[in-house]
Image 1 (cartoon, one colour):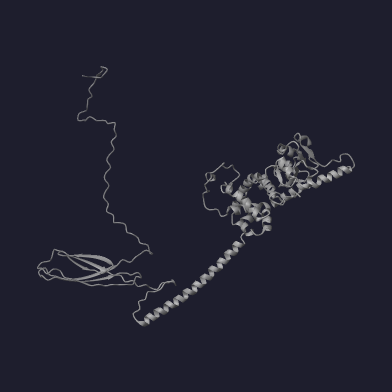
Image 2: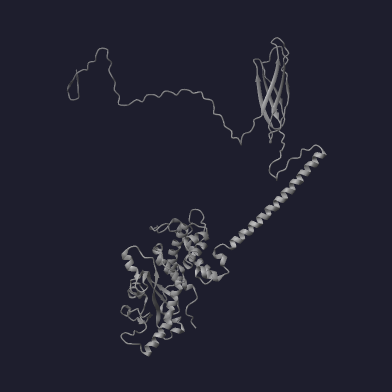
Length: 518
């Protein structure tokens, strides 16, 4: 009687008659995979290309065998003809071999070897019968015969056997030499002509090196006074310009790239335009105001590349060039005070606002904010400040044309640079005395007010102030000489308008001073 571990009685299972118990296994057995059938496939045939095809040596063997099973003399006569192509595919060599087996009474069971040896290639031929095996090894020597080639600078090998044929060969060689010499002269002339054309094109290439001896052209294209000044400024900017991250779109770019680290170079193919040409391109865009299409043709670039170069360099110059002209101290200003300002020795800065025309925005609010009642046009306005000797030391950001001069002066950051004892010279419209820092005075022409006319002393004062204040107008006129600011500025330049105006303003400082210190 079977019982479980709990003491429960278990019944013995009964099987049907003739049935066998089933054994269960928790491990799944994988059936064996039948072995693959053996396949008899011929080896693949190698397909030779037409231009690499080499004719194999052909072996023609004709064997005449006369033998008798009862005759002890067996004579084998084998003629072997071998056609071996030479370097030109025409040479043929036909050796002959006679084979005689061992004179025994019965057919020989030992193979008989016959070898005919020459110098170069070896071809092994084996023939067999029921009673004997003959191994024939034949070596052939290839004779090269150079055929006449199509090229004029190749010559045929001399195979002449007689004096007349040798004379013909010499005459052919002399004729070919004359042809080759004429050809060389023509090629030399072509090389000289092409070299002259290249030099002429390089001499007329639109690049700064073309105008290195023409300061007037440099002044016209760049706004800088001479080629020496142009190269000095480029030498200062080049180490930083080598690691520029070129602008791809208006989206924000990363702060730095791996190639911008010291000692690293920018990856990718070499740029078509050198850094010097890129710098020249940007200055031409600012000074002459050429369109991107024109610059692309002149420098052999695409319009998108020109746009990317200009946008990148403008932002780069906006950071670097103003750093060359920091706001001068009060002591430095008074030490270099021109004689014309002897009546106003405490003048620190002369200020004035200027406006540039812009394309009318599509939004009504933007149109209203940029409308200038003074210019009767949509404009941007900027505050410009110069030292008494005419050096531009302050340029504000661009404001909409509706903003007043007083509001721009207050929010531009100029007042934070002034010190007690300074004097600010401005036009009559700058009523900013109430917003100046303590100890800073304002020097503007007197107002007529409700009076009919100014007094004689006020007229003289107005003339004295105007005679020195005119220098700020001259400085602004230099800025307007950069023709990118001519006419109406398109909307496409709006994202870079501040940078363009500031760079143009500070580039004028490389020109000779407006006021000479006599």
